[in-house]
Figure (tube, rainbow, N blue to C red):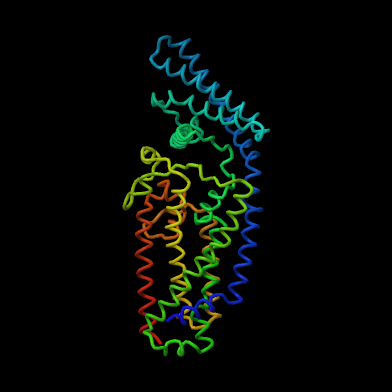
Amino acid sequence: MKGLFKNEIKMFFSRKNIILIIISCIIAVLIFQVSYERQYERYPQQRLQELSEEINNATVWSARYTRRLERLIDELPGHPSTPEAKLMDQTWKSHLKNLTTLSLLWKESEENKEKIINVEQRLDESLIEVNEMKIDTGITRLYRDVERDWNKRMMLLGESKESGLKAEINPLRPTAMYLLNDSINGRSYISLLIIVLIILFNFDIWSKDFDNETVRLIFTLPYSKTKIFNIRFITRFILSLFSVIIPILILCSIGFYKYGLGLENFTVINSQGLHAFGNFDSANEFLQAYDMVISIGKLVMYSSLIFILFLFLTYLLTNFVSYISKNQQISILISMVGIVMLAVTLLVPTDAKSSALNLLQFIDMNKLLSGDLGFSWTWALSVFALSNLFLYFVNILWVNYKE
């Protein structure tokens, strides 16, 4: 039995797979420099552009609310709407002033971090009274998008005050934990690299033996077909999993060296998106009441369970294709088609309607845990587990009953 395990380990670390590991490490370094670090460096300019649009919007609405207040005072003195109009007029003027200050501060963001945090805080806290009075802001974007986004910022602000930690003005800072979370998010370049590696490591797991006509020799060993299959199946998956961790470790190590660990960061997820079983309303008005703050460490834990199950599903499909094709050329061709389809599906944004059985949508952890898909993490975990179990038994049956 030990000989079988040793042979599988030796076969896995073939020249092809070692080269793939080395190339993946180089790609991880390039992704850090070209994608993560460049996005982080460009964020201040991007933020300035956003602030310019917000200032233009605030200028328009501030003027409108000022005119509305003047009309009420001149034409309808003592009107019941006057107090609300005064509050909105004051709020928009304060909003415009703070946005203008922010725009000036972001031009030298590194020197003005503390000031930026304080002004951002003032911007959000100035809306508390508007929110408590349940004033309809309509399409004005007073909340700097929708009310739920403002509520998330207030929750994170409260968590920062409670923990005594300073907020980070640049959300794209590529710390080790940020990179680890993005690596298992399912919609990033590095996560696509990991999925592709699982396929390329194992596309010839059985087809190579069929080409070399050694498969019959393997199954003449004094063990059942199921046991022989399971030894190869389990050993290769564990080795594949450890191998794909290597580029992730390199990526996170660079992030840790240059930008720190980032373990103190928090994020907002939705309890419906975490625990609800089955379909639920994904409207912001419904989800807002269920938003909650968690640490980045917990987010990584939730994301990793789903991503590992998806990798296992990918491995099962690759294993099955390799066995039924019985030819390395056919199995690599099918694998390449699958990789292209995955790349297009995962990296090209779409507005496709969510489905209870669309497995690819469930690895977008940002949408899943925010509740935007209308299905929860618990549901996704169950669907992946059942799909993997079904495909595993399909593999076992095929090996036992097909020559």
